[in-house]
Length: 134
Image (cartoon, rainbow, N blue to C red; front, side):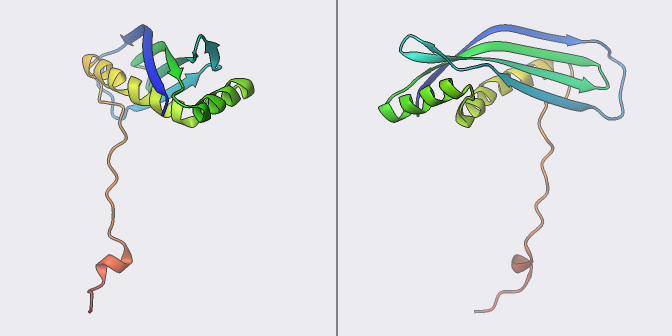
């Protein structure tokens, strides 16, 4: 796993209305820039935008992730990603994992529920419901 450091360059959070709403949908968009060579590593710019429906609030977090490969295999993967213009999925997951607590804190400060999908109840599988015989 390469070394990844993050730099948040700007944070914007705004609440437009404090009226009660029956249902609030929160949409999170993660936009990644092109992976660029920067010294010994690579730089990946990102923007995370959170919008609500109905439009009562919005949040933006802009920043960069700096990726330094640890071994030659990682360096080849990063060079390939830089050449094709598509960042590796692991980088997107890392960026999301870093920014999500910031978004959750901003949501709390604005008086919004955290942008987490509600837990889905797992129904036991058919096999688990049947009595077991030895």
